[in-house]
Image: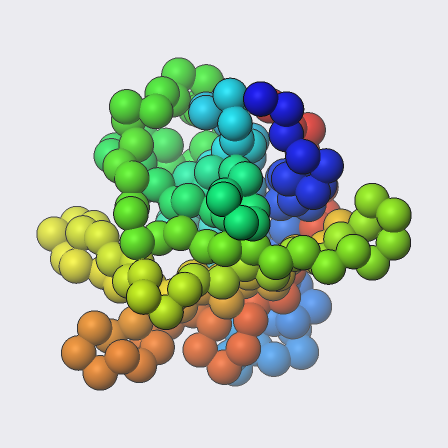
Length: 198
């Protein structure tokens, strides 16, 4: 199955190393300075582009967290992102900065997160140049168990050729209120290094 030009563009836009230094310096009360890695991995190549994502506080780059897998594919009506969680996140800790840890990753080492799926709208800015917006449909609840705790998150992002805005935030399942992440607005990342797709 050949991948559509918008899907390939989305993969290129998301694959890279990002940071939000400018935002963190301007609004340090609300935003910590983060490094974000989104590494292509050779999983589900028949119909998808797949990325391993991980982030770290700039002052603790050796303590990355939020390991996740993003599978970009063509849905029935639009592009979509399906999230997975590594069954053994500790084994992949640091793979954002050390991609050799991903060489032996297989699909059976991943846990599908059924409610963690985003639909993507695309806006053509110029020929072969897009702005993508990814959002969760209201009926999908993205939740999973991590270290014995049930976690609920709200996911979303915008991506262009040079920027990535993350709307991800943790949700208190009882109150429905955001407790961490993009509570007052998106994390605004700039791409500092591009990665080739797998």
